[in-house]
Length: 378
Image (cartoon, rainbow, N blue to C red; front, side, top):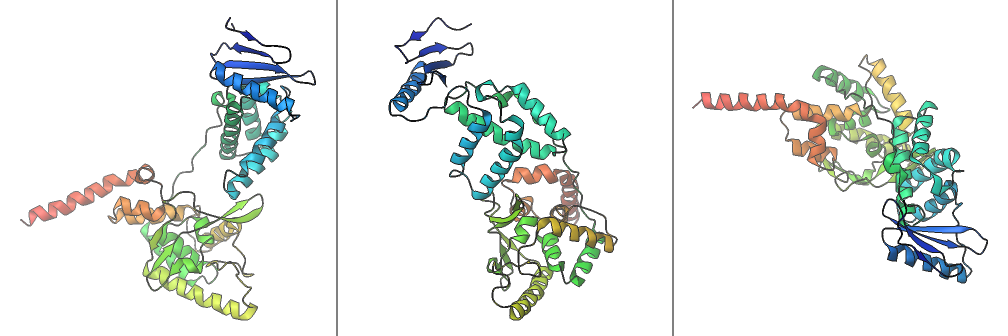
């Protein structure tokens, strides 16, 4: 039931009404006979919005009426979002909105969109074959857009608050044992195509995008360090360079001797390629480029990785599991979890503990064994 606290205004100025949910709504008539609503938490807020709307009408500016569709608003939202986020984030938003959200929800009137419609939309996308992870990202984008619609007074509340994206089934973490790691490294040292990349992956725990985005200027072979300064991502069928997502992801990593040796061999091969094809070859200064000197496609790299594992009779694991293997090797050998967290580029140590906490009991036993040996010598 609406509140009796209603303020009626003059001709074509509209009314202000308190809603059932306690928020306020201002409605005004537009010159074309349509109605426009503004929403807010207080009477003053919606009154100011309506007055601004009236000033826009008087100035001849276009005012979107209550029949604005989800498509119309999302296109407006994208236009403004372009100047607020990183280029790669905007491309991801644009692809999700244009490929999925607009075809599925675009014709719905924005003010009439319901949580039930969103829920059905998510379920339909999963049924059509879209992964739960992608649908979850789509939900996050729509939630952000509808938050802005609430802020602009276009809708009274964000219905995405009440919709639930599908549950994401996380892949079980796998890591190679010591014997498999030894075989992997031995085979990688003999692989002239991708061996150096594989060795760097399993000895540093770097992500695939960090490896494919790595430049020679980020490496100091004399000091034995690598600086993670950019990543390569695949977006809308294009390969784009972007900055690491977090401050901790931008990091310095010490290199093992076998990694330094592999990178020196990689450097020699690059110099030979440059002499053969000219300075324009590998214009991005990439450590790991394809034969044409262009960035490595992560999808193609994963395919080569699986072929490498099969050829060497090693267990089929994801490329990302090389990162887990690196972390497991370090933790099982007593490397401080904070150091491991920093090498992996985790935003905080809690993430590292959450992923690898199951290894801590074994580490505690190793610590007790060391202390037992100490006390027995007293």
